[in-house]
Amino acid sequence: MKIIHKTLTVFTVLLAALIVFSCTLNNYSFAAKPTIPTDLKSIAVTDTSITLSWDYSASSNVKSYYIYMNNTYLISTNTTTYTVTDLNPSTAYNFYIKAVDTRGKISKSSDVITVTTSSSTSLANQALSKKVVGYYAAWSSYSGYTPDKIDVSKLTHINYAFANISSDLKISLGYPDIDPYNFQLLNEQKKINPNLKILISVGGWTWSDKFSDAAFSETSRTNFANSCIDFITTYGLDGIDIDWEYPVSGGLPTNVNRPEDKHNFTLLLKEIREKLDERETIDQKDYLLTIAGSAYSSAINNMELSLIHEYLDYAMIMTYDIHGTWDSYTDFNSPLYTNNDDSPQYKWSVDSSVNAWLSTSFPKDKLIIGIPFYGYIYSSVNNINNGLYQTFSGANSIGYNTILTKYLNTPGFSKYFHSQSMVPWLFNGSIFITYDDPQSIKIKANYIKEKDLGGAMIWELSQDSNNILLNALSEGLK
Image 1 (tube, rainbow, N blue to C red):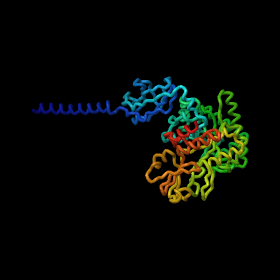
Image 2 (image 1 turned 60 degrees about the vertical axis):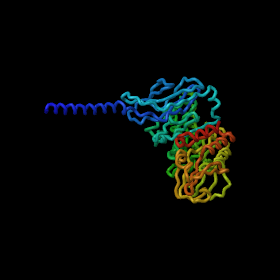
Image 3 (image 1 turned 90 degrees about the vertical axis):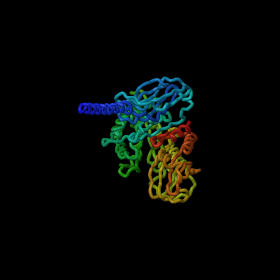
Image 4 (image 1 turned 30 degrees about the vertical axis):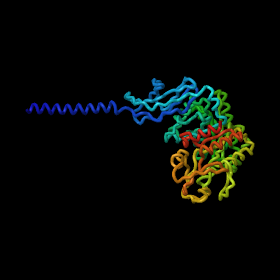
């Protein structure tokens, strides 16, 4: 009996071990497969190509993705975008994706999408009649809006913001940890839009402190211009955007400013243009020089606009922040026209800015107006006049993504539209939000066409990651 009992005990232990091993093997073989990639979509379509994009698999050990077209394996890639080429015009194609991990385990299929290539003539019909310049903020990459997520089919230019100016007065990387990779991703977008131009924008509100020193002497101007050439050739870019905020006066209190900035700015642009021209001869390609300029007449008077336009491909007016958190009363961020309302504070508009620039003989076809993909949200606003021109206790910038998801169509908020300024706002009795929407952006696009201006500039692309405003602008400019 003892022998039988021992035999049964050993058998029970072995059976239990076998069950545990079987369960472990089963979990390893099946449950450990990579998770399915999600949000498969097309982000660009031509007559012969389709660019796919999808979200990363949640599994940490995924090394690549298998792409299937019409139920047939097509190719493997380790990125989350891929352009399928050599397709036929006006033809429907089915796609799905599978994730593959480091052990060779393959996930189940993603959802299937069907995408139809455009006709061979439709691209010409859809071409933008004006420039559309989108600023891409380097820091967007930290929150997941990487350059490969930009819909470049609706842009003619991308300005990468920002490069800094080093202590030796040369252009330098603003975000060394991500800039080179972002430049690589941006240049890969030219596979989708071969006509896309990518510029490095220097300075901005935060990094304009050394412009006055860089522009001060012939030596410093040459030094800075040479560094610009080195920068764009190193990273394969198409030009330089100078965003000096601002010559002579304004900007951060810590900025260096001089009365000589007004003329030195002209000399700096001349020097950069000459260096770009020299490099064009060597590289046999065109290089662009642009600026971002103030919307206000006080800053306009601190630039020699009648002179600098000959050195520029175009200039962008920052026709936003016309009103904001620094004011004492709620008002519009980017009103198209100056209205006739009684208001306790100054009045200005996009149209006022454009007319001020044009009055200096600046060519209208080189003039690009800025369109904000953000607004301002004000709190503790008096419940008078639907919140407009009222005092407030606090305010912050707010992107269109957030306005769309958290406030627009939210119970308690009412939407209003100003019939003269041509912009909307939201109010719930206490919170006031000024912003641009598809309607106001299409009106601004029509204004650009009616005034025969050069186009539109966007600050900034990540604030409209679903391309709702970008689509409206693109459609309005056709």
